[in-house]
Length: 324
Ligand SMILES: Nc1ncnc2c1ncn2[C@@H]1O[C@H](COP(=O)(O)OP(=O)(O)O)[C@@H](O)[C@H]1O
Ligand SMILES: N[C@@H](CCOP(=O)(O)O)C(=O)O
View 1 (cartoon, rainbow, N blue to C red):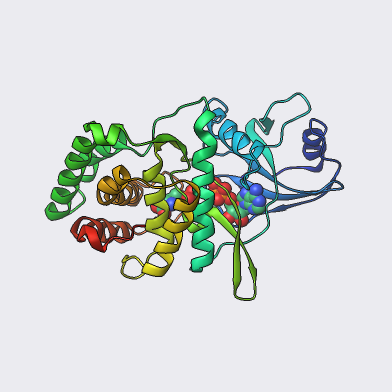
View 2: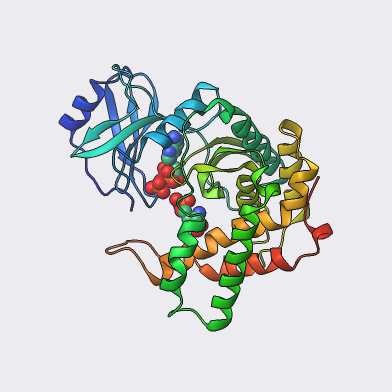
């Protein structure tokens, strides 16, 4: 269930009068998704997705909308807001901000093939190249400030040995972030949550091809290598153990490298950045688990999954990590 706000025909017609996308034919709630109300919207001109933002307010949305609009203008297959007749990217329904995006084809795939992983790597690199002239900037809302503020809240809930691991890793990552090597990493606006459920894949028999990328609502400015690590840590692992699956991991790295070559500087920090990416989701999952939002409909994600991944990345011999 992911329709928190209902839309009447009158409201829909009024909304569409501000766009040049034709007259409504049908509006159907989308069951998946957890943050927003999403609808498939068919008009006489095409297929779209209407999103009503349930958590972010209109002042928090411009970075995400401008970023996806920027990527869309560069012909990258992302869910981007279609401009209104007056040029605005945002509208309002029932006092809540909303936007309309073209409907991408494809579906969620639990274990993407090596080919799809390669295409995801290529797409990620294209997204990174495309933001070189993107002017807006935003902190990672799940970055080091969030880790530090979460630690005292988590302390009463988690065993001492886990708290110690958390403290050690946060300290190590804060040191790393101050280092000249880290500061020199190429950085820009990144998705920062490009898990498999935020990509749509077309399936044709056994063949899979990437259709597009959605859900940029954790986007922020960070090293491009971090975005690659977040994606690799989710897409190319054995879901039970958290170990990398070499063929799929290698395919993603090769895809990325074929568009945006990785460097020796990236290589030096690779293990640390893979750990940073695991830490980010370990902390946010611990936080959501022990401090669920009031009236949340969600079953929190399992924090132990990223605890396992963090340990594996920290303890791995550097030469055993996938690289080009
Ligand atoms: N532009 C789009 N094209 C096609 N489907 C989309 C698009 N945007 C969202 N969806 C569908 O809506 C679902 C929920 O979207 P998502 O952005 O993940 O929502 P939430 O932010 O609520 O988690 C996705 O799983 C996908 O099926
Ligand atoms: N990918 C994160 C949670 C963020 O949720 P999303 O559905 O908006 O991507 C995790 O798995 O912890």
